[in-house]
Length: 127
Image (tube, rainbow, N blue to C red; front, side, top):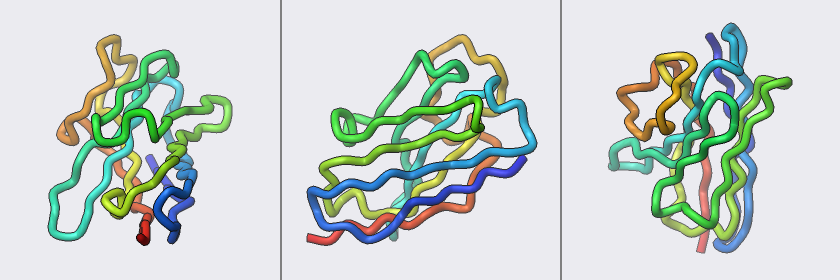
C-alpha cells in the first residue's frame, strides 16, 4: 500500500489550498480515509475523514465549515479542500487508511485505527 500526498505550500491567511492523496496497492473503494496534521512541537491531530463510499464525512471542530474532504474512487484519490486558512493551520498534513475495510460505523478520528500513512505535505499559512 502506498499513499502519496501532495498540494501543500505557502499561502497567506484567508487563502486556500487543495491537498490530494493518491493511493495504490489497495482496494481503495473499500476503505475509509483520513487526514491528520502535525504542527511543530505538537502531537498529530485528526482533521477530517470520509467513509469508503463517500457518504459519511467527519471533521474536527477546528476545521468544520472551512475544510472539505472528498474522494474519487475511480481515481483512487482523497482530497482536502482547505479554505479560509489560518496561521494555526500550519502543519504537515498526512493522509491515512483505516485499518479495517468496509467500516459501517462513523469514520474514525483516532490515529491508532489507521495503518498506512502518506509521507506528509507541508502547509504553511503566513499572517
